Image 1 (tube, rainbow, N blue to C red):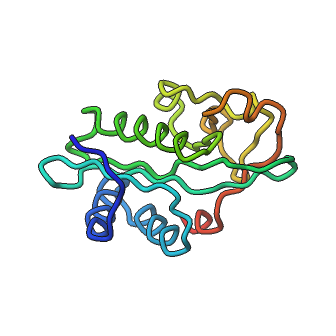
Image 2 (image 1 turned 120 degrees about the vertical axis):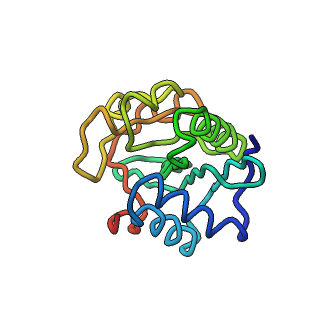
Length: 168
């Protein structure tokens, strides 16, 4: 398994992975919209025998009511081909992605995702940092991870995703 940054020649395969993983085109269209808007700060693919079997994307978010620079990314979407799910591909994508986010200087990551999946990477309910999501989502599904200890400590506020997310 190889994890690397997405290249233009991967775009069609990334679309296919997202469509198959989610059973609809919305997330694939979101990836293309974020990429087109220059908001795909980190986009990684998982390759197996030179075939894209997984994808993860991180894009910037803003925190209203917070002071100081954000340097916070949103993880979404993360997709793995259905026949490769539950085989470690997603875990490898998330771990590699978080390591790369830290290396690039980002201080924290938020995710609106499955509350039984993301805590294994250190994500906790974002409410612990005084953060809430702009979307109506269960508290346990909106999570945050400090890549730099204390980065979210006293920030508080509402996390806003890029406007393209409203189309999903």
